[in-house]
Amino acid sequence: MNSKELMALIVKALDDKKAKDIEVLSMEGISDIGDYFIIATGNSTTQLKALADAAEEMAARNEITPHHSEGYQTAIWILQDYGDVVLHIFNTETRGFYSLEHLWADATRVDISEILTQEEGGNKNG
Image 1 (cartoon, one colour):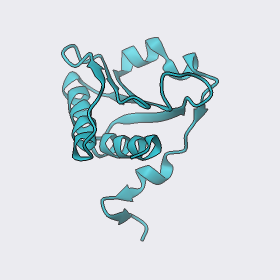
Image 2: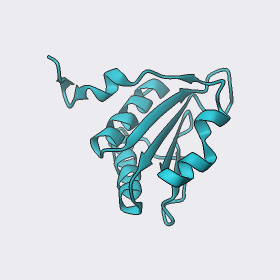
Image 3: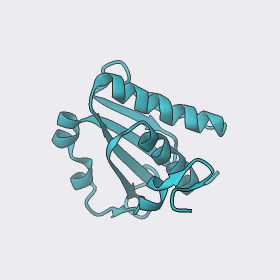
């Protein structure tokens, strides 16, 4: 599975669990950290953990595990590093404080609208 496919799977898992303000930044040519940063917001510690669990379960179904994970216990900023895809799940206050989208302003924002309109096994529109 390539990094774009993994990114799409994780975005779909986050959307299914009602993550807010999902943003994907293409880091190619910007940083060696990975190909994509996925940034999402949850409303509560419970939702942040549910979002992290959903992403990890979706990846595991495809025999992929994060190389590194942190922040699950405190659940204000959960990071899952899948190598070429790095997931950041924040609560609202922490996301605003760190503002990764502004920190990495040179990165290209990826249009995820097609991913968000897909249902399991097909497209909502057809």
